[in-house]
Length: 266
Length: 195
Image (cartoon, rainbow over all chains, first blue to last red; front, top):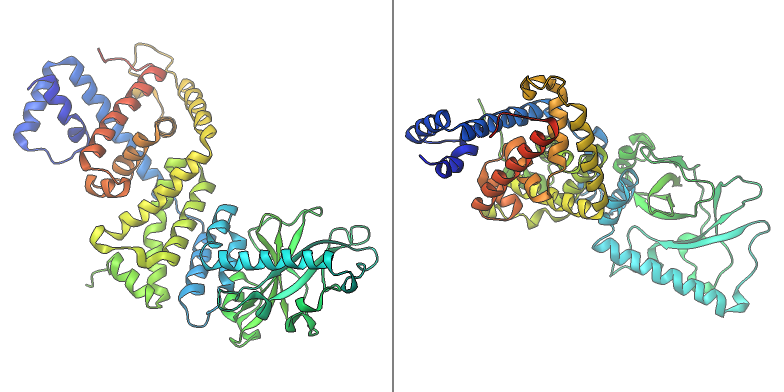
C-alpha cells in the first residue's frame, strides 16, 4: 500500500466506517512503517474521539420548551378545525424573533399586509385631501400612526369588511408612554361596523418571552379573531372563559413588528 | 413490542389533524436540528431561531415534502441548513470574530511542557471546546460536512441529500475539513509528532 492509497482510507478507518478486513490490515501495516501516515492516523483518531465527545456532551441539548409551544401553536393555527383563522400564528410570532415574524408574514399574510398597508395609505391620503371630514386630534394627543389590519383579511375578504380601523394615539405628556386605541374623526368611507360599535375591552396583558415596548417606540394595535385554544396557548385566559367560541382581541405590536401585549374585546 | 411510527407516518398523521403526531415528530427532531444549528452558528439563540423556523416551514409547507426524494429527516436538516447558511451570510462579520476567538481559545490551551504530547495535556473539556471553536472557524462547506457526518453522525448518503451534492463531494469535503482541523489544532496548540 502506498501513502496515496492510505490517504484514501485514513478517514474511513478513523471514523470506524466499514472497510474490508484485508484493506484495514494492509493500512495498519503501512501506518506502522510510515511515520507520517501513522501520525496522521493518530491525529484523525483523536479527532474522531473529540467529535464523539462533543456529540455526547451535546446529547442533552434541546431547544427550549417555548420553541415547542410556538411550533405547536403554529400547527394548531393551521391544521385544527377550531382555529380557522390564522390569528394564533400572529400571536405566536409574539414569541418569535424578528426573522421568524417575517417568515410568518409570507403568503396569505403578505397579501393581508399589503391590503392593510394600501388601506392605511389611502386613509392618510384621504385625510389630507378631504378637509371637511377631518378634525383635530383630541387635546394633548398626537396621532402616531394609523393601522388597519385584520387577521381574517384575505384576497376574497377585503380588510375593510372585517377589519378594524383604529388610530393609536399617544399622550406623551401625562401617560408616560401608555397607549390607547382612540377612534378619531376620519372619512366616513373608512368607518367599519366593528369600529363604530362600542366595545368593552380588558387591559392589555403583556405577552411572555418578549421585551416590553420602550416608551418612545411607535406601536400599532391589530384586531384579530381568536379561539379559546389560542388564548390558552399564549396564557391570557383560562379555557373556560370563552367556551371555545371565537372572540376578538387587540394585539399591541411594536415598531419591529413583534406583538407585545394582548387584550380581549368583549 | 410495537415499532415506533416512521417520520413519514407521523407527518401524514399530523397533516390529518393529529396533534400528538406533530408533537412526536417535533420531539424526535428538534434536538438534532438544534444541535446542528448550534454547531454551525456557534450560538444558542440562533439555533433556537432555526428550530422554530424549520418547524414553522414544515407547518406551512408540509405538502412540499416528497418522500421519494429522501427521508423526512434530510428534508428537515435541509431546511435547517438553508436557514443556517442564510444567517451566516447575513452575519459574515461574525465568522471572522469566531476565528479570532478560536485562535485565542486554542492559544490558551498551549501546553506548558514541550516534551509532552500536547493531545494528552489538554484537559478533556477544554479540548472539546477548542475543537468546537476550531470547527466553527472552518469554511462553511467543510464545517457542515464535519458537523453532519462526524458530530451528528449522519450517513454519507443522507449528508449528501442535505447538502445537495454527490456523496463523493461530501467525502472529499470531510477529508479536507478534517485535514484543515488537524492543521489548525496542530499549529495553534503546538502538536508535534507529525513529520
